[in-house]
Length: 408
Length: 136
Image (cartoon, rainbow over all chains, first blue to last red; front, side, top):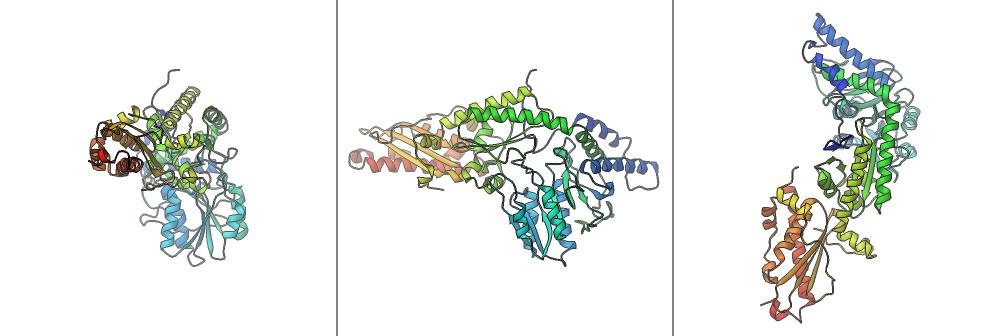
């Protein structure tokens, strides 16, 4: 099969909508346009029924007992904001301490920082060099003021899947609410809010082949019943937790995407992991001083994150970006001009954080694409190393740490 | 972010990649930046000790495309200039030529630093031998 360019291997930033999802959504833009809160005519009933079906499909995918436990949001960021700020405000009299981790995605970190400015205390539990959080570190961080533990399910950069069930168990034991940012996990790896003791769970449609602009927050109703202060006021939709007219076509798309994920996850993960492993083997067997980030055996099927010593990430992407979409933890590709705090949190040097490249594979990638991307990456790394002063010094046997660098 | 055509050209066809022996007579070496900052440039000049003219220049850069382009352009500009003329190259000249956006200005600053460091190293090493010509 002829390759079609550019090749997309940046599926942890977003995924294309599955055509089956688009097909399910289309009628809800035109003939089925009703407002699900219109209780007194067929247009409203039809829309409400469609949203209920979607909610049910999503509930099934994450193992929720009751579809009503799902609150639709505008996406993962809003779900995380609602979970953290909603709990903080509602339970403030109980305590002012939150335990989270150093490798949460930006929304998680930034909401925690804001809460700190508002008088909350936040502990950022460090991560082990393999990307896993030690549950004992969370236990040690808990105080009698702790009201919430928030730990991401699977990491957006290194794909590491945390021991969520163990954290849920600890939270139950201590009667502390447990939120997990599962934006990268739902639809990609088995999630079960009941078995894993999850009280709040954030997810988003566009990372599981659904549309952009819709996400959801799972809010446990029983054992314990979680209460949340809403982020904004309005018509009291979504059980008062999220006012605003539901984007019915997007909800329908989310539901269909969840249904497809449920049906195909096992077979699809096997296929994607096989391609990912091929890419990994090809690159690591051809490039010296390339380091895999994150624990290999507890990773999302599509994730491959490698630091290529002596070359800077953005320059690697630049060599490939006409034909392949990847991403990097390099400062030059971030809006903050800081290198990846996730790679840095693993204890790697800042240089290796600048040198990290994330390949994230998806449902529609092919073996031919994997072979092409692997070969081209190897070529680009070799070319850049030929013009890297660091590679030259290292090859001369000079330890880069012994050089007194004149930083800007 | 889209790159300017000139940055893409220098990235795809970098001029004067390579190294001179550090102790070769007439060679000045500048090594600036730091790995943890994501940018390191090594820029070398080879000066004709008789005339004080930079006859050749080479670079190696660890950094983004704009850093590679800035150092590649610097080597082009250095060739044929006297040591004194070379000292007048400003980072803003590089910004203008490569149409660097504000977030990439530090790449041009680093290239200017690399030029200055190479010139200083050359002058250090040749203070006695070439001083009369080099600092006319």
